[in-house]
Amino acid sequence: MKKIIIAIDGYSSCGKSTMAKDLAKTIGYIYVDTGAMYRSVTLYAMEQGLFPEEGIKEQELKSDIDAGKVNISFQFNAETGRPDAYLNGRNVEKEIRQMAVSSRVSPIAALPFVRALLTQQQQRMGDEKGIVMDGRDIGTAVFPNAELKIFVTASAQIRAQRRYDELKAKGEQNLDFDAILKNVQERDYIDTHRETAPLRKADDAIELDNSNMTIAEQKEWLLARYQERAGEN
Ligand code: DC
Image (cartoon, rainbow, N blue to C red):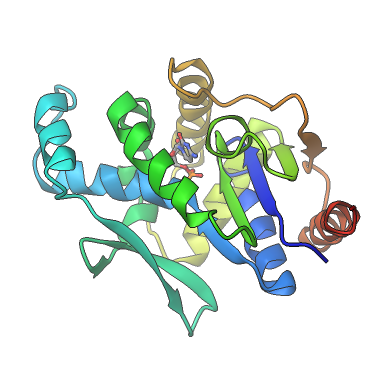
């Protein structure tokens, strides 16, 4: 079968990454979680004091980015069988999933200079094809010519429940369902209303509402779409 680019976009916590990771593993493709890249830039801004309560210090963040001080990469973790995100050579996979980062990432992801940097890196990762990339703008801005585009949706309630279960399983204490639901809804709003590369379904994307699907069903559905597309001439 020919090597293709698979773009998986959708709302936060809709299970895109689980589907994307599983598919990549099954078909021997590289998996890239672009949300982890935006989360890593957010963590950088927080750690450098560039994201205080009053708002982002855009100029300082831009200077650091222009000076090459924000380097994001991925390294395969043999224990989990998945790639971990690294910020300037440090494994940040756990930190970037915490609520403190989740609640700040959307405004960072709305900054055009942040998007320009990460989009360019993502496009380079797809040079050789054979890649499954998930995010918000992969089928629209990063790879508008991707051979297979999927747009995943699920209700906000269901997505908040999934995020709650995920954080609980990771051992996060004092979880508040309503706060998680609010965070999901706020991120939906910012992600779909920002000026640069807002979240939207590409015209040629296949939509999947997975509200009532098991992970196994989603996996099977996605594998079938891949086989159809990669088998075409
Ligand atoms: O998929 P996630 O929840 O880890 O994404 C974190 C944030 O990053 C999300 O609020 C939107 C943003 N994002 C984006 O703007 N573009 C992408 N390609 C991926 C994520």
